[in-house]
Length: 103
Image 1: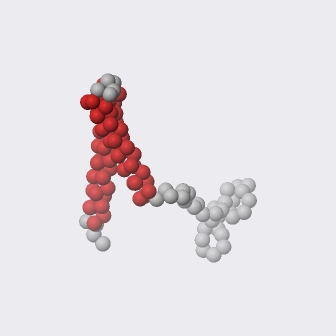
Image 2: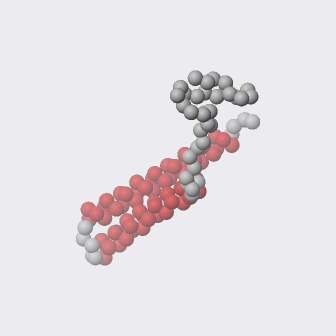
Image 3: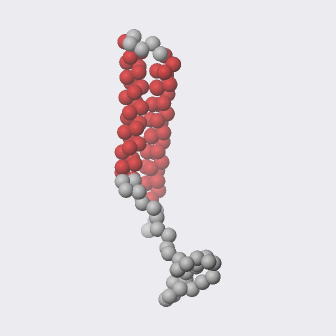
């Protein structure tokens, strides 16, 4: 097992491994930045709200008499919206904590 490498940088190599150990690189997915993930989440919640609005409209006009599916759609939209509001509150809270940190 090798414990030291060139220069002052310690390197660890597993027994039987070929070549020097390489630093771990984070896996980056193309387009997986925070803004695109946030936009996708908002669009998903917006879609759930639109589906529930459409279901309520169809029930109110007599086009669809499936009360169960309408209520399920409303609850899904409600849960999605409440989750998004909770995430927003946590992000704002984290931002406020960072802004209040002493430098």
